[in-house]
Length: 318
Image 1 (cartoon, rainbow, N blue to C red):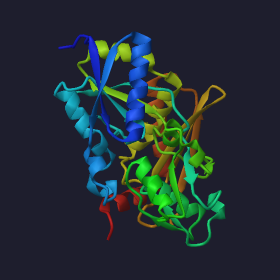
Image 2: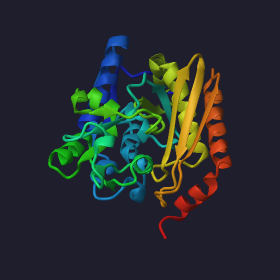
Image 3: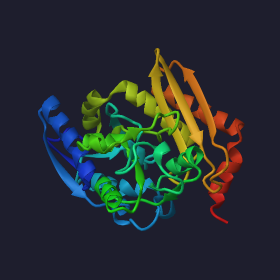
């Protein structure tokens, strides 16, 4: 049975400073656009609690959304705001993405207190990231560097850099810009060097599937160019069984009325294995066409030799 639009809305959100900024941004949009009364329900997720292990070892980025979905299911909240890059490719039954908002800068940022660019780092310099996607691309750019794990929210990662644990770290530019920390960015990576992950820089609004009236209202917030781009990106990942244990990058941009979708797949278990790269350009008008474009790119990666890469990841370390 469909649910009517409530008089006031509650947004479920993680309690990190960036997550709260994102939820407050959506709250302000809902209040200014529709005159709705909106409150926030801050929550700590398993992904926030487990900081001593890589996400790929403990259940993936879905650990950042499960508690929020429980709040939706139990009626404690009406919608959840996510960084779309943290949202699993397939949502559980009973949940839907009601809107994707206009994207912030999707690129990765090089952050360092000592060095201006990746090229300036001395041999053996310590670079912090726990993203396998970034690990394999950094390895291709500078195989001489020492890549070390880095977990925690954005403020925690910056603090660890400032304490001298790393010579540089790599973060999403979007989070730094949203929190007014753009001055910490020494340079942004051109996507030709460091291709972003699917959905990076975009916000997704998740609701219960039976919240028909709310879904219709939130549809007015959809930024269609971003929606089609991220659907194509997520289509690549979905077709390959993508998760945070897969060093996969997929990024789409609009170019002359066509969508240009690039993807890069690394081996993960063999850092010196070559990266598999492909690009497709085509006109895209519907979400179905965008998803099909993602599947086409995934098929091209298979043609380039993705199967042993994926098989090795599925088998795990020897």
